[in-house]
Length: 156
Figure 1 (cartoon, rainbow, N blue to C red):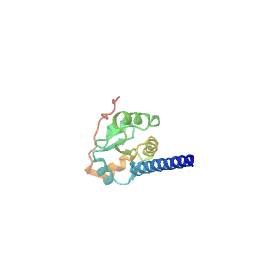
Figure 2 (tube, one colour; figure 1 turned 180 degrees about the vertical axis):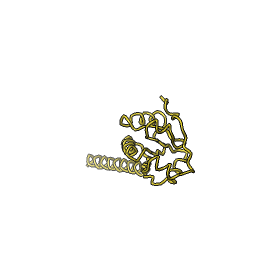
Figure 3 (cartoon, one colour; figure 1 turned 60 degrees about the vertical axis):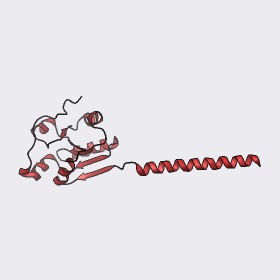
Figure 4 (tube, rainbow, N blue to C red; figure 1 turned 120 degrees about the horizontal axis):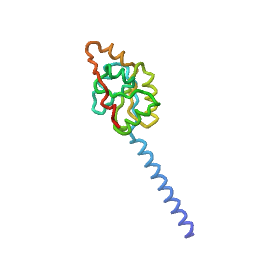
């Protein structure tokens, strides 16, 4: 009888431990930051988003096009080498806590970069559905492009 009592207490303790472990996992899942993936459809939405302190606008166009004109504050990371340079820059300089906006010519490079960053664990990604030229045309005379090379060019 004494042996059954020990076995019963052991089972109860094991059930309590399993319940607490399950509860801890549930709490962790509920409190973990949720990914925020958005599609930016308009210039006003982009302009308000990139004004935020934690925003990072990545211009995925070629270097010569970036230098000819870009949005103030944008960093130039041409999407080449399967995004290796972009990932390297983000890992060394920016981290994963930024709200990242991805812009290119027409959306193709942005889509590839979005998928890459999502797969690498970046959680606050904003795919800009339109390209730089669309932005310039929509802004009209209100937009004054910045010219010159990216300050991130020699970040390493």
